[in-house]
Structures are given as structure tokens and as C-alpha cells.
Length: 251
Image (cartoon, rainbow, N blue to C red; front, side):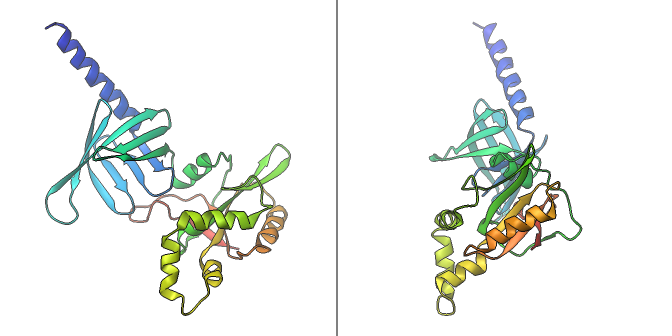
């Protein structure tokens, strides 16, 4: 038994090291609320506050120790996790009912495409800038080439034939915050006006799609109750900028 204990300890250490190596990289929460960025010597959590500290893993738990933003002490957070290739299931040790999933990706735009099973090369544009819009208010539309055909879908539907349904879906996701924000301004605008002012389409377009095909999609989108449209380009994440902020061009 005495000989067995060192072997078991070594197995646990090796298992923890293997998991830590597989964790290295960026992980985006499936509901787009948070990001984990694991490095060799640190973990950065954005949600949307920014926390950086040391971490270690043991068995099925990530132990995270970081500076408390409200005083000079150190705070700790433990995450129970299960790693499955590019998927990371997480629950808070202090609240087992709070569970979520993260997807590993190179960037937020890469994560959005993975999440929506889209194979798109966004390309870049010198005109693309970070917009002042709330990315949570954008209905994502994906335009890609599949063989010789153009495929157009949204994050909620397989096509764009029922855009009012998509608008209903995003409003349901944003409740109650969206309605609460409107209540502050309801003396100035109707709720329908508030929707048109804030909800928009965010287009993820393959760079090989012709401008003519893009124009056809844009015209169809403008026939819905939402008229604001932005085209998203590959976004290189920068320090100090929220991880989910996209570089876009208003169409």
C-alpha cells in the first residue's frame, strides 16, 4: 500500500498537468456572457469585469485566486469542470445549480461561427470600426457559400423567411433587461420605436460572396421591422476592449 500511494499521487499530478495543458487558450461562454483565457501562469476572466490571477487544477476543479477589486485582499473562486475536447462544462462550487458551457475558439468571431456551425472567412476591412451598439442586441445573420449556392440563415432560423420570429426570439433572450431599459424612456418613445432604435442585424458574410448577393439579402432584411444593419469583419481582440465587441461597417 505504501508503494501504491506515490504512484497514485503521480497519476493525479500527471492528470492535472494534462488537463491544464488542454485548457490553455480562450473559452467563450455559450450564452456570450463570459470568457476564460487560460495561460501557462494565469487565468483571465471577463464577464464583463476583468479578473486576472493564478490558477491550478485538481481532479475536476479549477482553483482560481485573484485580486479583489473592492479591497486589497485576494479572492478565490472554484469551478467544477468537465473537459471534452473544445467544450468545457463548468459549474460554480458554491452554487451547483449554476451551470454553463464554454467553447474553445481563437477569437469571439471564431466562437460565433463555431457556435452557429458556419464556415465563413469574414475577411478584414479598413473601414470596420468598433461600434457603440450593444452586441447583445444584434440578430446574427450568416451568409456563406455551400458548394455553388448561397446559404443565408440566422442564429434562430435556417433561413430569413420569418424575421419577425427572430425578433421575438432575441427580445425573449434580452428580457427583462431590455424592457427595464425602455421603461426609463417610455415617455419619449413607444416600445416599437425602442426596438427599432436598438435591435439590429449583424451580418457575418464570407468574403467570397458578391456584393450583388449581399445587396439582395440586405433588401430582404430591410423589409422587416428592423432596418439597422451592420456587416461584421474579423476582429482582433485588444486589451481593454470588451471581448464581445465587434468591428463592423454600417450598411
